[in-house]
Image 1 (tube, helix red, strand yellow):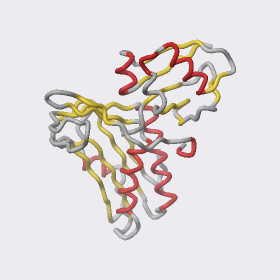
Image 2 (cartoon, helix red, strand yellow; image 1 turned 180 degrees about the vertical axis):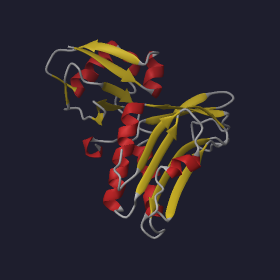
Image 3 (cartoon, rainbow, N blue to C red; image 1 turned 90 degrees about the vertical axis):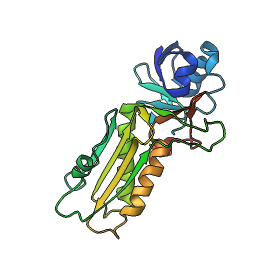
Image 4 (cartoon, one colour; image 1 turned 135 degrees about the horizontal axis):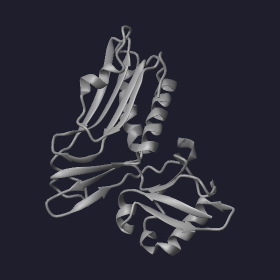
Length: 236
């Protein structure tokens, strides 16, 4: 069977394309697919041991079966609601209107909104990255990213049931120093109903399971920033 496989961030850069196609016999698993990719695209060999695989927008394991029409993606580790639980999830290239986003989760019974706002900093003190940043470039597997944002919201409600509304927004594209990159907000009736912890959980979890990557661009070099957390099927 023929498989089309989407590539993101460093994997796309190594191949020079956002999609590859391979032909493997049936039945097939993620592992047999990776073995074929190694043979056909040796440039990806050093990256495959740590890359993540999604099948139909769900994290997959080596023994996960693959069907001919599955939507498959490879990427490095990552750097909906109801009337009673209003939500707002977005991947966008547009500047963020914080007040408009908060309006999506504001209701008459909401008395507290706690939020986290991430922005581009101009200096980095991490090994391997440019010491000075001129700008960041963000990329996302958008369809899957918004599904994982909705999953984060469900996880928050399981732990903090008094949280009423949740907003999770990630910007992509080129972002200059000082521009907003990420916005997480949790709403509740009162400030002591878990919204501080819920907002912190939201940004931490986004860094673990939402397929978004950033490239640190400095005056002399650029580097994709990759995480260390490796999601499994338990993170679906």
